Image 1 (cartoon, helix red, strand yellow):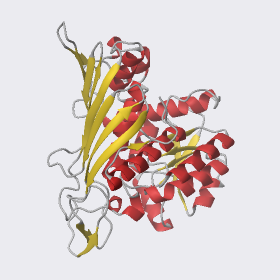
Image 2 (cartoon, helix red, strand yellow):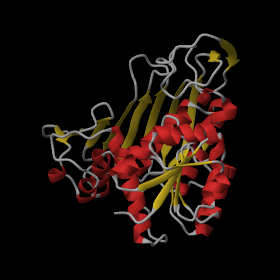
Image 3 (tube, rainbow, N blue to C red):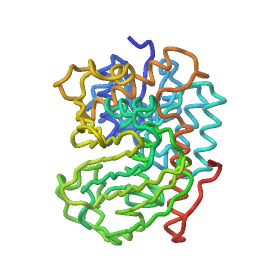
Image 4 (spheres, one colour):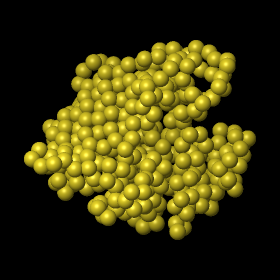
Length: 386
């Protein structure tokens, strides 16, 4: 059992996912904070939590809470994470860590000063076969990495009548598809390969420059399920689609295609990593199989089975082979790594999860991608050298 208690801020699409995963780990989630006391009380009842906080300060003043999970809209992350760190709380924040690199850099420094665990929820790292792919790269099974290619595509914003706060730059940031889902892919490729991106060339497109906003907010992924009548037109500047060419510090090349307007793809992340010894390919639509490509012998399909995996991947696999694990399990395993780190009580040790420094890397990368798209040229990442 974990000897800590947790509170959550935000109860939209992802908040209840956090609560469910925490409960599966036996972690006591004591309360929730929402935009208003009324919304908070409703959320507490829906998630069967004992307490609804009336303000952020009330939550931070609760000495019975040691950890705060932030699952609010992007524009609120910086202030909330900073306040939680100042109060000495451990913080698990949804991505992006902040709205710009100035803010995210300040949070990295604040986390270091606070001497607490500070993580960003890049949960896709914790699919067991993604951990296995990382181990294979680390032990040299793939050889030198030549290329890293892939995509993250969805269809939940396919129609101009599809709407969510994320489509507004002032709410979610100047990048949307790239920042919202593309950063998951970018973080995953860094986690697996250990390579840094040194330069980017991006082409972005806003497919629906005008969307219909319902008079009443729509939850993430729920637009197609929620019947609405009255709407208003709203101008959109954020990206529905993007293609980003990548250059890595070891000379490898890569490309990322990201889209939230690809019909039929509900939530599909794919990658293919080509090395001098072998290639690896994986898809979140079939997360329990890892394709391993060879030149001079038959290719392999590794089926997720803790008895066949490396120690790290097996550690984050709950069920035996043939008993599939998926999206909700990645949250459980990501939080398991985070809370194990808290229990170990050595915050100078390397973290086994995505840290605030990792979150800052992705914000810097997004700013370079946006600049590249605006100026139609290669843009170097600041501070990254061969």
